[in-house]
Image (cartoon, rainbow, N blue to C red; front, side, top):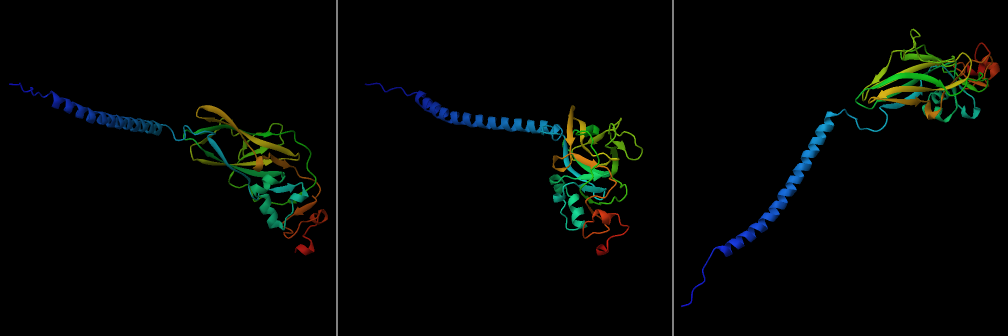
Length: 278
């Protein structure tokens, strides 16, 4: 009699091992993907947490100070336009609107006469406060003679105003910014601090007793522990400009005495407005 083959559990076990391996491999792959995802999420969370502990804007490029606006304070003094083609005004209202418009100033040469107030608006960009340690007027060249010709717009001053904090005699031997109230040098021990989003408006009154001068404002400041510098100019990148009073009338004068048209030199010297301006 022939012997029956012995039945063992090796074959089922082999089949079970094959099935397990088929199951195990995808499971291992899935677990690996999950672990990678968890690691990425955890790392991202750590990065967000670390970033959240740093000041806002710690990695923002550029200066910690944004120069928002530079403009001549309206009604802060007379304006002389030396080029007649740039002074084509319809009436006094049109003349005043244009000489006080930063876009017009950027495109046309003009000079304050004797006195002007400029407003400079600065905003902090970094949460770590930026400290302005010095702000000084710097002439772009030697002062020259008083301008004698051009079209004058009488933007009559309305008092000193409450915003004027600093002033400078730009024709002085060494011009500097002083406190309007007592004449002391503002940055001799004083600073201006700008936190992120904080706005500071500096009103700077400049005067000239006669010479024609051009200048910029140079600022020194500390940003994130580093010493930095910036240059502030008039609209259009032009230097600030001023000239002194002249003894004779200009070629044409726009005045409140005659809001409808400009006055000729002979009419300016009259005690009252010409008949056609009354």
